Length: 213
Image (tube, rainbow, N blue to C red; front, side, top):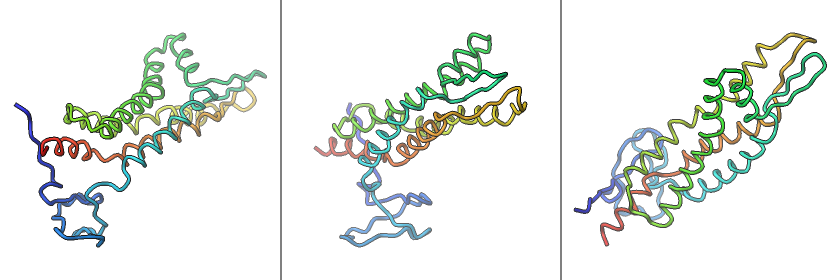
């Protein structure tokens, strides 16, 4: 039997983006701006230009993802030698020296997680634009996953910060942040903003339209 879903929008209700109060949407609002009765924020039945904003932020993050992985994350100067390490070369270094736990954590947080978020957001955007009605609950879970793991992508930046703070040996050794740090931080921030700008309620709108038809 085909499942039927009812959204708050179809019942004339709208959720506030700020305080999450569920309010009744005026039957005749026209171009009139509607405000939340509790916090006073402007109400929207759906986030304005959600798909366009998400695509723009996601594409910008994917562009910065390339130099974030190709440019040096750290530059180490010790006894007259200078060594620049990318994220992947750092992972390989830890694996070769027996610290495979650290290497795996950095690989997952800094390489796999951002790439996974790209794929999930692209899938969600395309599923809405092509009006897919398949497995809406699973797609909502995927969206919740991208929001939950987003903040942990900053792990590599934290590691670099800690190394710079700890390794202060004057003329013997010095670690400085490489140009990849800025690009990687932008990737994390942009993917988090992309996930926030995507409105998961659009998934249910498509399903509801199909049910009405």
